[in-house]
Length: 241
Image 1 (cartoon, rainbow, N blue to C red):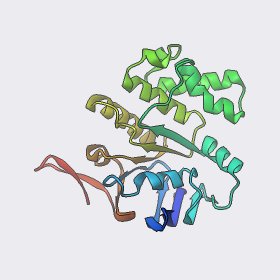
Image 2 (image 1 turned 90 degrees about the horizontal axis):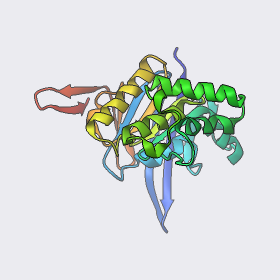
Image 3 (image 1 turned 45 degrees about the vertical axis):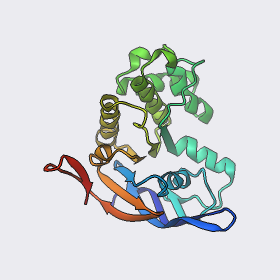
Image 4 (image 1 turned 45 degrees about the horizontal axis):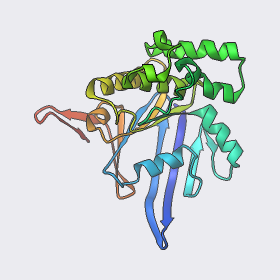
């Protein structure tokens, strides 16, 4: 039986403003190694709130969260920070690269913070990640010398540097044109299918979602559909079944 890299069981979340408003209700699902999963739904449906909990950055919720079979409830902030750095790679809508560092140095930062390898080993690994993404020639340049699509590829390399259990993305193609969005999708697909990397991506892009292995559809804080995406060829629009 293939192991679950992440599992949510009965996750509920309320905001108190000033009365309780439930934003997530009984969220339960799991992701296996090598799965490329998307989460879709209208703005305000709870997608980003859920991702924030799954990434261990929000600890105020009901239910259970397991990463690599280990419960995340009641862990101290320092323990969760270590989990995030070691087990989770993040890719956001904005790349958040530091312009004072080269692209190679940007990729190295999470591994240097983790402190498990010598600097030379980290540098080698960072270059190899850039090579996988076809952007190694830009290693010694700075982020402000790159296009938007190239910056996002450097951000993906940074997310990969500690060989995470799972990569989580919040609208990672949101700032890109169609061509560069397709490039990022193809990179994610290759990571899943060639390197057995698990990915969980929140997106508004239904074309992107329709090509992932599995799509979770949310509405009003609930999962209303788990399904495999297909393309409705007669209409030219993806749909989730």
